Length: 104
Image 1 (cartoon, rainbow, N blue to C red):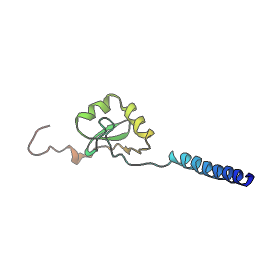
Image 2: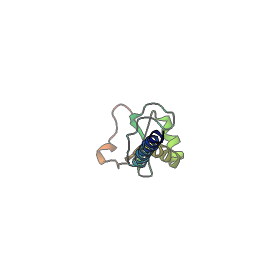
Image 3: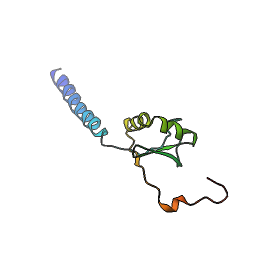
């Protein structure tokens, strides 16, 4: 009976140590953003808000205003989920060209 208790205790210690190691490593494991933090749907890579030096992808243009109204809320929400946000990039001169077919 003492042997069973000792083995159970040893197993619990080993598993517990592994769990702590996994949890400690979670702060280092980052994943790409796949869902819109506003609506929870799949992101559209063409729709995003660049805020506080970070790029937050959204599902539709309607979510961009909500991100810009409270960027810290959405940044902290995504980072708490382990999402590594892309860095905001500055637009090059070629991106300033007018699109054909409509006015900006």
